[in-house]
Structures are given as structure tokens and as C-alpha cells.
Amino acid sequence: MGYRGILERIRRAVERTDYLTPTSHIADPRQQEALADLAALMRTPGFDASDGISLVREAHRDGRLDRVKMLSALGVIAASPQVRDYAEAFRLASQQELAALDLGGDGLDANLASAYRHRGVVSYLMGHYEVALESFTAALERERTAENLGNVLCALVHEDPESAAELLRDVRDGFPTEIRTALEERVREDGDLKALRNVLAE
Image (tube, rainbow, N blue to C red; front, side, top):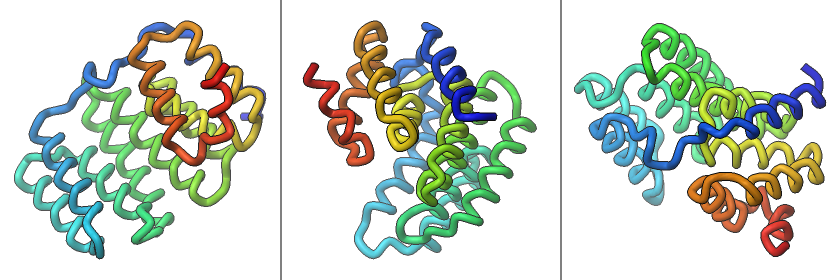
């Protein structure tokens, strides 16, 4: 799909009103706890990826992470600055997508969005911003959250800064307060979005 087609998909996605707030799609508390444990471990100085992998696989064996979340967590480790194994991260994203389809259910859209998001992150880290934009757009279409919208902005600002600024203005003009606030906070804190900070002053 061409770049203009991707822009149209973004516009259609953001025009929908059924955005999820940060607390409206919380997963099983046991899964949240297991993922929080991994996040804390990855923040420790000298993080060893093998320790993270062991923690994730043990949580899956104990039933605290389903297969989709396990593959997602392993993908985060693979793409992390300490590892940078992008081939493995892509492989895990593909496995995660298949696992999401196998699992199905009410969480299908969120689980597919997570797999698309992982692909987008790896493409972004490799400098392929238009490819990342397509993946992030697919994630946004499946799960309309501030996180996914922020990822779209990160990729879009590299390809078309004016369109990114226009999208941010649209969000600030008419989106739910929680979505708008979360996105504005990310723009202030995320170095990849610093080109959009002038919009916040308008």
C-alpha cells in the first residue's frame, strides 16, 4: 500500500470514537504482575537477557502468562537495546500473531495489535519509517489507544511532519481527555516526538 493510502487509513482510524482509556483494557492481574516483573528486571543495571527469558518462560509454565503474552515479552527482550536481535524479534511477532489467531476470543484485536506493534517497533529501530508506519497503523485500527496513536505519530513525523502536526492538532481539538492527556505527555517526554512540541504551545 502506498504512503497516501496509509494516511487515509490513519484518518479513518482516528475519526472513530470508541477509543480505549488506559484502564479499560487491563489484562488478567497475574499477567500484569508477570510483565511488571520483567519490566523491573530490564531496568536493572547490567540486565542479562537470559535472566529475562527464564523469567518469562517460567511465568508461562506457571500459567501467569498466556502464549500470546509470553511471545510478546520475549519479543520485547529481543528488540531491547541490550540485545538488538531484530530477526528474532520479527520471528516472535509472527508467532505471536498466529498464537493470537489460535486463541481468538474477546482479546483478539488487542493481541493482534500487539504483534503489529512489535513489527512496527523493529522496523522503526531499523530506520524503515514508512514500513513502521504501516504496522503502527494496523495496530491502531485494531486497538485505538493513546499508545498506538503515539507510535503512529513517531513514524509519521519522520515521513511527513506536517501531517503529524495536523493529526496531533485533531487529537487535541476533539478527543477524550484521557487520550489527549496521555498523548500530550508522550510528546513532551519522547525524544522522537520533539518536533511536535511546538504544537502543544499553540
